[in-house]
Image (cartoon, rainbow, N blue to C red; front, side):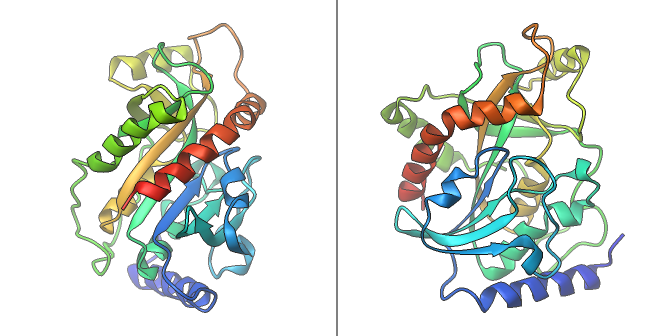
Length: 277
């Protein structure tokens, strides 16, 4: 396990590199999930940096994650966007999965919008729905804060009673009908992957209160809260989870669904960024 001193050194080196590239601190960090990277292409006055050029940044290995950091303007606000994230199932340690969030924190970014592609556990959902994340259940078998605490960034035992900011969720729910979206929010279950869940596992998730299931997000949100960031989460329901419908599951289906809804997703997030503070 990487030491506190070593991790802090890596975070500082990535910060130093990115600070040399930007003139002002972005107001928002945005993490774009599988197939949802189109928003980054809409940024104005954008600077594109490959992950491989940033000191100590991991590399995306999954289809639908292009592996670029984009700094620019969305709805006249300065943003830093991750066009592709890192997953525990790729073999990365949790400090690597959450490394970009740590870098955002030391750069001074206070706000985070995190998005993902998710399976629909709630039978009232449909593929293509956009759902606000109300809360999450971490079933990944580990926690990104395990090990030495980065005391300069947050407390040993951070509070997660409002991991996803209530005020922001209320704003987003009120905005959804204006965007021809049905207001929905739900509980996201985070599992380690990479195999999709079995029908029995989905019945279990439904029984414990999950509405959505995916293989990301919870680690980044835990670390963001540890560092005092405000968080809004959005899931794109790309498929109904195993056993809900007779169809087999595939990553191709995930990408195909996000491509169908990407314009609606982009328009919604751009409108959200314009009104969130």
